[in-house]
View (cartoon, rainbow, N blue to C red):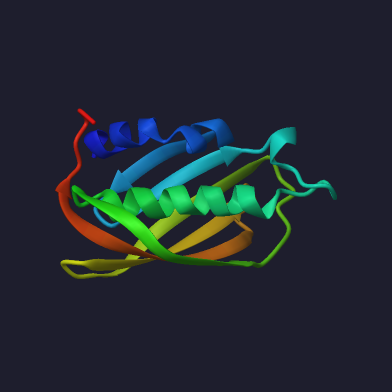
Length: 134
């Protein structure tokens, strides 16, 4: 899984957001984002776009964990509670997979393990294999 983790080092937007991939297994991933001022919206809570970005990277890591390039084709998020803490975690779990489509549920929680958001994502599985050479 280190190859997949290394592959995501090229995700410049996730890097800009300060997201760290903690662990990847087949069909599963866990990522973390330390909340800073740059993640807050105008009312002082974590911006929905930051939460979506965190969940989206967890989804992408889990979807690509099988070794084939997989790209998101649909995603939705439900915000359950305002993000006010210092850390957000996202854990993606594969729900179903076939040769062309895969589906994932991502739970976003804070450092108290309170549920902040639930993300659903569907990916198109390409024939291309993950490559570290570009």
